[in-house]
Image (cartoon, rainbow, N blue to C red; front, side, top):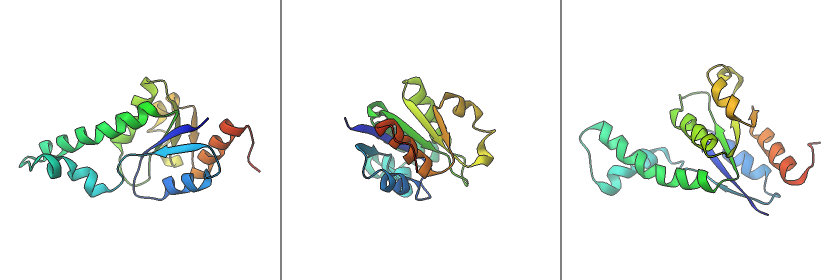
Length: 149
């Protein structure tokens, strides 16, 4: 049985690649949002036309990106949401809440300094990891029953 894992959140580090590489021997299919920051920000105006007001520029892009995000989360068996160190990722928090509302198994990945700010998100998660390799270990365990080491 192939498990579908949606990798949501921070796009500025290699955490997705570390999970995908670490899980290459598992029966897992990964999906993710568009991780090209400029393409994600500008898809609405690039496809539907320019907007003089930044609100509508962002609004168009957010709605088009939501098509992919909703499908990815809906089809996922497990949703991993990464909160990075540098930016406030409101979209990641939204994705975590959406996944939880759909009853998806949720793994949150974040540095320890975000513990307090993410306490409600952590409460909805089935696991909270600090490193991508811990996510791989969780996937390996739930798929094969094997512990690390």
